[in-house]
Image (cartoon, rainbow, N blue to C red; front, side, top):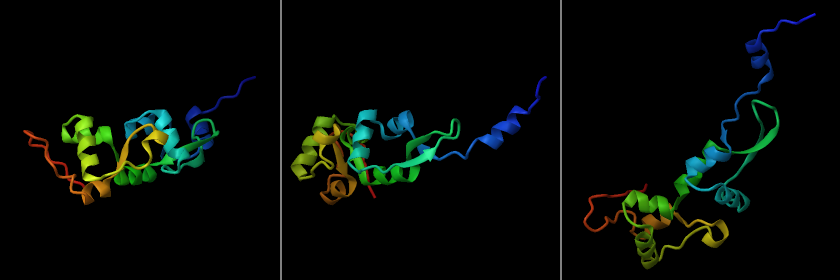
Length: 141
C-alpha cells in the first residue's frame, strides 16, 4: 500500500504566507551590529517586534517588521556607520559630536553600541562637515 502525492501541492497547502519581517542574522546584517545589541534594542523598546507563525514549521517566532527597521534607521545612526560614511576614524567623529554637544541616545552603556539621533546631528550642524583633506560630504534629511 502506498499513497502518491504531489509534494508541491502539499507544500502550497500547508505553508503559511511569509511574514516579511527580519529574524536573527538578517536583523544583524541589516543593522550592521551584533545579535546581543539587537536584543538590547528590542528589550529597551527601541525596536518593536511582532510574533508570527513561521512559514516552514508553523512555530511562533518574534520578528522585527521591515517598516520598524526602516523607522529605526531613519531615527538613529551608529557611531561606526557614521564614521564609515564620513571616511574618518570613529574616535574623531565622536570627538566632533561631543564638542558639538550631541549626546548618544539610547544610553551606550545599556545597549553596548553608541547610537545618535540623526535629527540631533543635523540640528547641531555636524551632518555636513567634511573631513580635513577629503571630498566626502554626508547629508541627512
